[in-house]
Image (cartoon, rainbow, N blue to C red; front, side):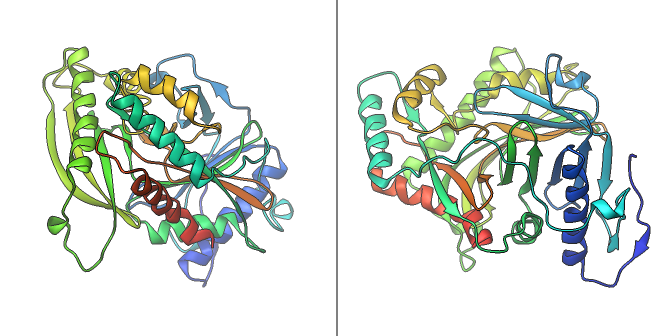
Length: 383
C-alpha cells in the first residue's frame, strides 16, 4: 500500500492531526510486528515507512537497494528497512489505518537491551584529560569522547508528540524515529548531513564542528569563534578533501566555513558539492559513505588512532549514536545523516548521548559544558 491517501477530513490543528496519524499508524504497525521509520527532512513534511518484513543486513552498494530506510551503528553495521508501506503526512487530514480497531490506544514502541548508566562528570573529564595527554605525546590531533545520560520520561510521555514537537522546534534538522523489533526505538534530531545525492545527480556532504549556544539577539555573521573551534572545523574539512583526493576527485565546489544554526546551538559549517553526472561518478554516494564513516567530527584524527583510544576511554556502548540513518532511493534520492542529538528509548526512561571534540586547545570543563548543551536539544523537548 504505497502512498496511502487521506480518507477523512478533520478540523484539528496540523500538529494534532500529525500526532494522531503517527500514533495510530505506529500502533497498527507495532501490533502487527512490523518495523517502522518516521522521518522529517529539513523544511519538508514527515514521511512514515513501514516494513512488513525484517531488517536486512546490507550486502550490496546502496545505489542498488530498493526504496526504504538505512540505519547504521557506530561500528558501521548497516541495515535496510524496505518501504512496503509509505505514507506522506503533508496536509491536515487523518489517514485511516488498514484496520482501525488495531489503531486504538497508546503506542507501545519496541524496546530492546537494558539502559546504560549515566557517565559521571569525573568519568568524562578523565576521558578528556586522557585524550589531551595522548594528543600531546602521539600522532593523534583530535579525539571525540562521548557520554551517555539516563533520563526518566515524564508520566504520559508520548513518542509521537515528542516527534511533532521536535519538528516544530527544529525545522532545519533531520528528525526521525526508528523502531524495530531487532534493536528497539531511537529518537533523533540531527543537523549533520553525511551524504546526499539528489534526483539531479548532485552529491552533497558537509564539515560541521565547533559549538556555541544560539543567541537570537546576535546575527550569524557576528558570531565569534575561538582558535580551537576554527581548527577543529578545519580538520573535518581537510578530512573530506583528503577523501576526495583518495579517489582522485578534483571537481568539487567548497563553500564556507559559515556559521549556521542547529536547534539551540550554532556551528561552523563548510559544504561540498559534486556533479556526479559531469564527473561520471554515479556511485559517488556509496563510495564516499564508506570512506567518510565514522567522520573525524564524531571520532577523531587520525581515524585509526582515535578509534583505538575511544575504546579505552569510553565506558559505554555508542550503539547507533554517531552512526547514520535516512531514506534511500525514495524519489531517486539518497539522504543520510549522522546520528547526533539522539536517544534510545525504554519503557519509562531514555539514554541520551552527546560528545565533544578534543584538540590540543581543549579545556576539559568547557568540553563537559558543551556536551550538556548538546543534550538540551532533546531534553528541552521531552521535559
